[in-house]
Length: 134
Image (cartoon, rainbow, N blue to C red; front, side, top):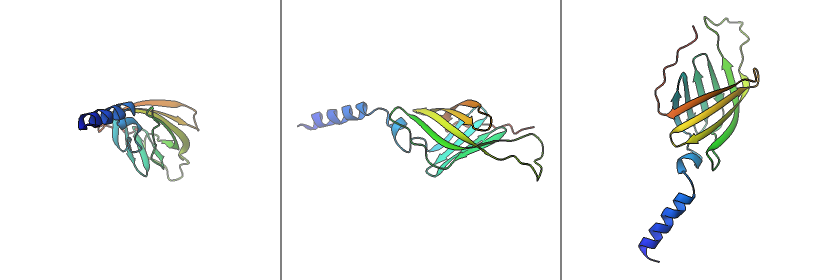
């Protein structure tokens, strides 16, 4: 084969494999920001910060070939004002389901405590301003 043919075959293989940004194991690593939400993901897991809450998951989510992932974690909501020393506010189990497409991430977080699902739209490296509970 010629060098041109080899190059064309390599380009076709990359195109057929889909978007590398959405299906690679480390595609989610980094900082993500949205309206009143920030998400930091590393190889060890992730940390979600909200205006009045926070969540964690202890492993790196790996998107499938369609850019979708699901991972178990925790979620805790805060109340306004000072936190009492005898407060029984504990993190509840939660499920994080998401879809990455390029530099955009949609995330649905469902708390086992409330059974409510909250939807977030995030962008890689987007600055975020959190307004803490008042």
